[in-house]
Length: 114
Length: 260
Image (cartoon, rainbow over all chains, first blue to last red; front, side):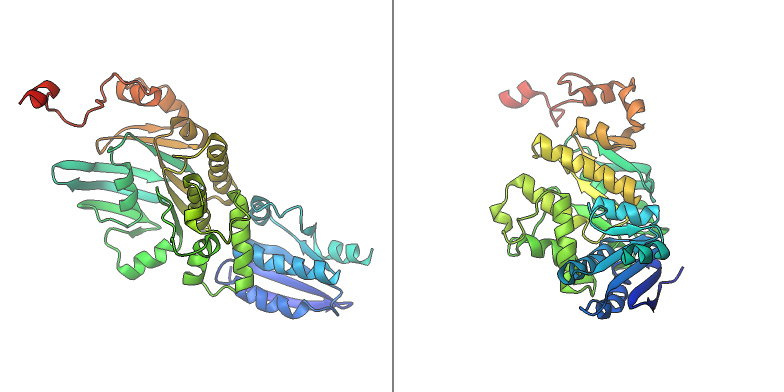
């Protein structure tokens, strides 16, 4: 599975769909995609990881930047579709409780409306 | 998976690896046990491509590391993490820069991301807050944990640990043992641990290999090793001073030598 990222917006909320392995060599691409959304005018960002087969520390650290932005701007940053491998990577770094995690993008959008 | 085939290494008349055959299976913790001078570290150096054997093969992802070019070894080493016995930190770099070093050397990752990765790794080894210290300001055990943080900073597929718990206090030993198991179980990392810490070995190993003067004298699960009837294995795991494994390294008679 090659690495690819697709984005779309729904009511101003950025939806980012990632596919493939997020590692030291692909995570800079993810960062380049995410950074433009991390501005005060973005109401929220959802990153769908359901098609991600592997994520290493650089992927997690890239997502942490989203978390930092959401805390600073009081915005929502939500992860969805975490498979076991991705969840294990998060739990190993003790960050599974820090991120807002929803089962899928629809659930994330619904949570953001609350 | 790493497969060792018929590996031979001699230093003069001393045989450090005597036609060794073994394998380190993906997602398993293999512990290489043995007394001082049994050939554990020599095997580790050959498996990581740091030292060439006299003959034999070391297959890593299908590539024979004993015949690999410098470029091929360099590529394979990106997938390997190594915790050296003495931690091998750069004395002139801070703890943060020591851990960040492989990331700066091998990747194009942004500084902000590197900072988060280093923080995560320091948290794993229980040393957050030491980022700005120099290695000389840490105890031996803390340096070893920093060495481990650096070994895992690139998220390697296989990690080699050379005496990971020697010189550590019991709590630090427990932390390192748990970390080795967690990395292994949660990330399916292959772990090869060289040790003579029996208790630690029994806690973490899926498979144990016992070396004695360059030979594999036992191989199996923790239970199989515990139940071994080989007197050398029994002496080693019980730490008996008397038995078939001599404490002295020379065959010369002590009195003959002292009176000559």
